[in-house]
Amino acid sequence: MKSSNTFIEILFFALSALFFSRCTEKKLWIMPTPDADNGGLFLPDGFRALVVTDSIGPTRHIAVNGNGDIYAKLRIPNGDKGNVALRDTNEDGKADIIQRFGNYRNDGTFATEMRIHKDYLYFSSELVIYRQKLTANKLIPEGVPEILLVDQYPIRWHNAKSLAFDEQDNMYVTFSAPTNVCEDWYSVPENTVANVKGKMPCPELKGLAGIWKFDANKLDQRQSDGQLYATGVRSVVAMSWNSEDHSLYAVNHGRDYLNTHAPDHFSAWQNAVLPAEEFIKIKEGDDYGWPYSYFDPFKNKRMLAPEYNGDGSQEVTDFTDPIMGLPAHWAPNDLLFYKGDQFPKRYQQGAFIAFHGSTNRTPYPQAGYIVAFIPFINGAPVGTWEVFADGFTGVDTVFQMPDAQFRPMGLSEGPDGSLYISESRNGKIWRILFLEEKDHFTDQHLIGMECRKSRSYLKIPNEKLDDLSYKKPSL
Image (cartoon, rainbow, N blue to C red):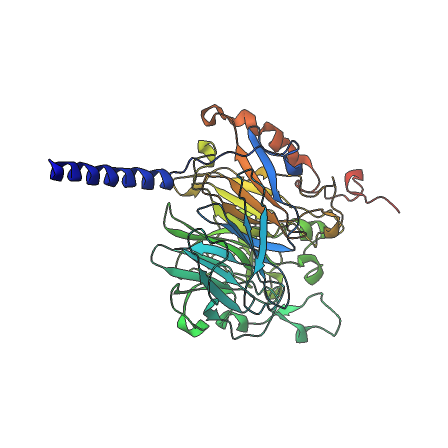
């Protein structure tokens, strides 16, 4: 009888442990109360927002852990403690513990990445990729950061080390091009940019303008330890591995200065609306054509660059095309495939893109400064981009980039399916929630956001500058 009772007790505790583990795996997250004004954001009907923290400093990318802790990468050029950890202890959605950490040397202002992969926190300065082990219930990772990869090139333009991880523990790293279009400045007189030629072949393609694949667990690697995975990309600040189709995706910044480099072939208006930022699905061995070509979103074709004898009419077919051309100069700086189920079905497996906003569309207004959404079905984008989160600019017309109050930068998904957005000016972080019946969400909920595309920072500008909506008021 005693042994029978012992067996029952053991069985009871075993079942209790199993029940507890499953409950903790599927924790019922408390939905916080959104801010009355959605933290200043405009969202599709049914979505609400709250401000998690107001100003932790110039913030690049963010990562949210499985317990809800948030990690942010600061954009600081030197010193240490370039990371910030945030925790909400009372489940009201607001961070009440905010702590700087990071025992490593910051270098350069393009330090960007913050990722969580298999219980490690991965982050980067411009020249070094680090990781630290995350410990359950501890906010700050323990120990000294391990060095995974050192970039032996000097500090340069477009030096962000963006990261993505696949299911086989491969780590994908960007080594972007440091120039606009591999210009040969000896081809034109001093202080002249018109009719500049490009270097042929472009020497930057030998070690830059590409994406390399490394072992995510091997320490002290150099670029020579990796494998060139794809080439011909100018500047990638955001990559993401899509576990649905087991593929690598990125958003590539298109080149600039078509009009100033080739005034005989491109107008100031074309300079503002060309070329596309590129949403690319990357297969091993792909070549996306930088610097020899650019993608024209109106023609939906890859065109020969003017620095290589193009005039805007010559198509090239030797390179891989993007899966979608995105608006010119909007600076897509983060990419997230939504895996949760808090949001309505149309958002599941789709892509969110944070557009940091343009800086060089003068004399037309600057554009972007939103978080967009692109639906996906069966691993392919459907339709076009949609406005998901707006209101970051704080003004109706962004004449110059500093006019924008906030610049959306980082995206991360929380364990309950919430979407977190960071901005790079002051370090404000928003949390987006869906609080209605998911099954009742229809296209009618999107009408208000579609109407926002008429704003000057979202629509294609009128080619005629005498349009009063684009005339900057005199001071």
